[in-house]
Image (cartoon, rainbow, N blue to C red; front, side, top):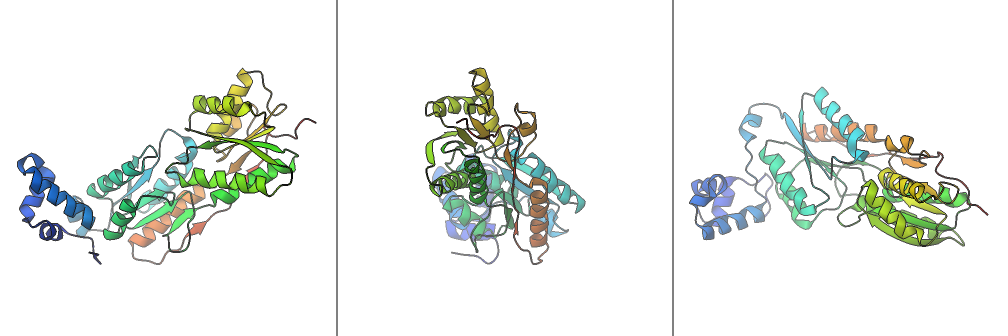
Length: 335
């Protein structure tokens, strides 16, 4: 069953065959409702995509005041500048931002989406284009205004403010290959549930495949942690690449630190590149050659798109270009 308007408590009551009062008790005081009835209600809630919206009464009497953002983590600076710009643009419009994190867990994303909407979020910013069918169905059934960021998608996949992760990684790898490197390795972010990491891997593969004599000697996926990236470097170094493509600046910096601890010179023995151009890329020793992502512009555009959607105005996706920034961590391979 599909609704033009978000499903109501009456719709859930009808589907579950109970009263609206029973629905309210099941949500607010579940111990007072028999388990078999709760199960029937929860099945109806999931099927309809219903979310109790505690902020609806206030929002009905005034313009929306709150939106939400669901991001993978606050522990990595790759989202910091973009989120700051997103929040500032919302603040200028008198809108408050609520932020939740998922730990890169797709099921946690749906839980956080539900929680934010229950707190009165009128719209959402989500990261990336990949999510389980249950989440897509929930967004569709609830008719949730949302914008996707840090990635682009095919036509019809929704509005986004992002960049082509595959093309950006391919451009960086081509730049490394142009320096004369032929034994390439990659320390990538964990790709499960992370379309950005997966697209960056695909970009590296495509660039290596297009270069005569080039070889991708290994790919190791790693959490976005310096120590774990160092462990990934240890695995990669067994294959003696002349250049390592990092799926993020954190992964690249972790590789540089571990190389230094092992007495391996960067870029003399091995070049290392990053992705994102966060502050860490400048304080790394040597400073990282990296992919500059226009995070501030992207964050502001995401806010403008979401605000336009919430105001019932036409909105269009915003696609941004990335840029290879060369610094000291990349050099031609030793002959």
